[in-house]
Length: 186
Image (cartoon, rainbow, N blue to C red):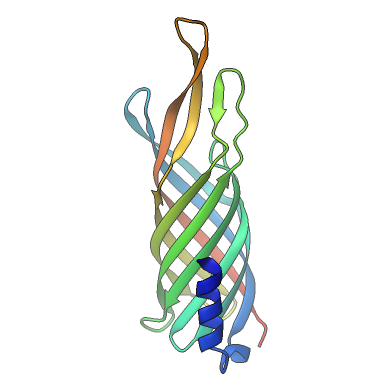
């Protein structure tokens, strides 16, 4: 699906493509919200320092911009490789409302008692980007998971002394603040 969207966008915008290609680097901080399924509580994890890094490329056509980014999300139990596809629309001046598809590959490593799941979590997001200068911008995006959102598990021994894996937490949503550095190619 992703390759079809990219092909259609490139095919329909081939006339002005050479005038609107840029690459860049993104640094992101995040807060994610999760439900502790053992204690039935809602909790939050906040990482204010933008440790997560991404390389991005985007093309613009008329008032639309399509951006593809890939990189790594750092954290404790929510960490791993990510890629995202963002569709932006130039609404007013340098403000761009956007829609995002994000694929996160959690790099969990559990132990005998439990740990983070090693799984893929997909998200959809909405947000806005402000292009403050030609080379720098910021964005704020709110994401919700679609599909499986298991984050942590516990290994518990049942009455037959067999180990059972039980989900300890599920991610419910997250917010990312991005710092974007653009380099125009043309």
